[in-house]
Structures are given as C-alpha cells and as structure tokens.
Length: 154
Image 1 (cartoon, helix red, strand yellow):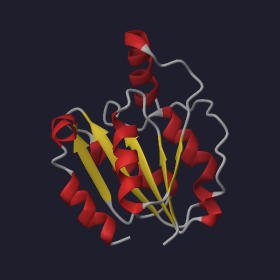
Image 2: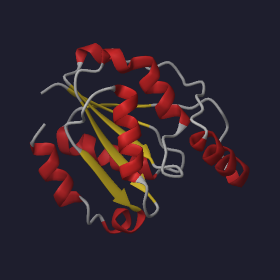
Image 3: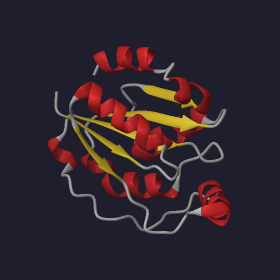
Image 4: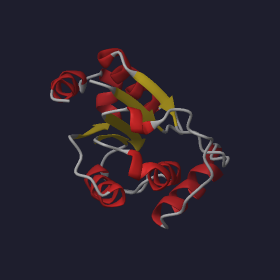
C-alpha cells in the first residue's frame, strides 16, 4: 500500500492525530500550511468566518506528487461544521490527482458528519473511511483502537 497523510492543524490537535496515524502505518506525511495568520482569538474568529463562507486561502507549495500515492488520508479540524480554508484550497488544487481518499477529523464536540459530506462533494470521491475524534477522546487516546481497525482496511 502506497499511502500519504496530508494534514492541516491550527492548534496542534490534528497534527497529533496525523502523526499517530503515520506511526501506525509507517507512511509518508506532509503538512498543509496556510500562509494566512490564524493565531490568537482574532485568528480563531476570522478562521470560523472563512470556513462558514467557504473561503479559499493561500497555502505553501505541497512537495509530494499525489499521483504517486494509492491512498491519501486527509486529516483536518472541523471549523463550525465546515472545512478549513487550507483544506478547501488543497482539495481544489489537487482533487484530480487523488485516487483514493479517507477523512479524519478532530473536533471540539460535533460537526464532522456535515464536514465529511462537504469534503466528499468537493473531491467528488467516496472516501474509503471517515473518522471523527472529539477533544475528550483525543486527550485519553480512546480513539486508537477504532482507528487501528479502520486503517487495516486500507
């Protein structure tokens, strides 16, 4: 299996999950870097506004050739039940190069299902799997066993 993890993380929570998946699969990983400053409370407010309004952003060049990979695991936070602009931009730029995709979301409480539906429409592919992790489970790593089972089916 030729797999890569592409992730975006504003606060570090999604990066933690992406890194854990990388350890489990022993595969490549690359961060999707938003060049817009989204730090602090003002950055958080602007980020939510941008997500709700389906905004795009400028992202750092992605160094990996996605056509080389059979599977992409896209890890993203859920912002107001929607897609962060960096993920929206990434998929808009690379959706034609993606063979198979899975979605992993980190969230405070809810909203992942709505975001997964929007992601599926954006990439125009049915994901191999979707998996949402809330902040409480992230702290205790209660999500790991279920995640391991999903990863076996790639």
